[in-house]
Image (cartoon, rainbow, N blue to C red; front, side, top):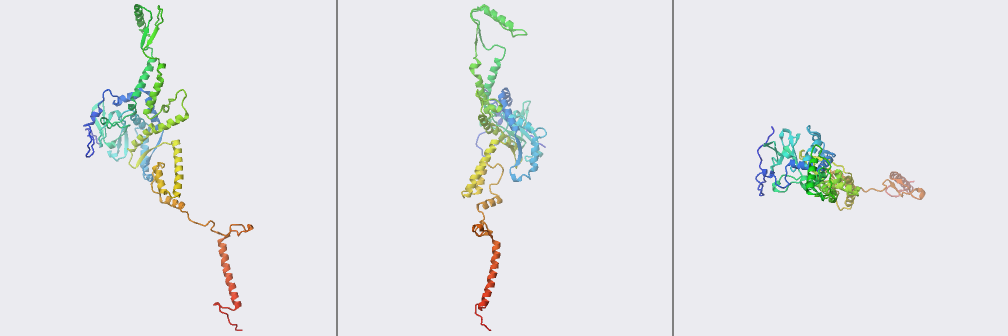
Length: 483
């Protein structure tokens, strides 16, 4: 049966810890008056929804993340076959848990991650409610109802304002959380800082600018004074009264008329002309600050960042590279670790991000390193195993491989460094020149051996004949003629 904890857990303290903690985490939830750095989650969500630029940044990051393919692999690449069933189970599970598919999970968790201080949290249902049990279901939680407890065993609590008397605390294996920028203040320990909190002033200035331009489009007069020139007081008051009456009724939009005056009537506005304020440039500047808070550029959300000259292709490519290294890279790493915490220790989650430029640069680096290390190994400056270890340390090898050379690879290296010494033409003798050119040609060694054997036999026969002619026996003594 699932264990449900309803009493507040105490903050975890290490053995012999000397640093001071606040007596209870509840004091950290109190809002700080006049400081927009602390607002509840609903307020931060409202701030983001009032500014379309922030919404565009959030949705663009989510869309780019959903567009990536992903896979689950063993941390030890040699154990892929024995972990095949677990890999297939979790890949199918994350694609569709039964209640949520992959896109819904990312929309939910990344939306809270980029909006509110707590970040995102989900409840993880495990088999038999055990820490190492297989995940059976996921329940996406409202980050506005969650808060950190600073307790290792029960790190997250949940309370809803509709039922403030009931609080639930999740054990560490039954909840998963991700958030941006942990706060360093002791009063905010356990909380994070989402991008809207970092760029709050820019968001507020953009909101004020939107209100300013919206008021320019309304039918009501702008703030200012109407100078009636030489009109007498009584006439001016009667005119104002008649104008007020004329603007009333079911159709208030009417045109007032001034007459019986000699000097021109002038309008004295309280605000400056929008063209003089150059507010469009100011909005562009604050818009750049807002997108920078998300680690992006204006061009990433489809807004031209250039002026009258427009953007160049090189500038656009450079901005895309910067985004991939900042906001998008950070978000991708956060989500990877989020899923790694739910998987067994021997599995890991990986995004398949095929960056063409990165792949080309990595290929060139591998080729240059292999050429350089080949020369250094042949020259005896380093060993092949040291070169292998250095390439792994440089990050040029992305798969899991051992640092030591396998026996077959070591044997190939030894053969290349110490090749066997063989004759250039072991089966040929004589000068390799054709007989027509005055040479001996190529005489095969087996023919020469046969000829040598026959020559030895002929020499023995001739020697016996000569010995008989001179009358010598086999011991070299002269025989006596008996005839």
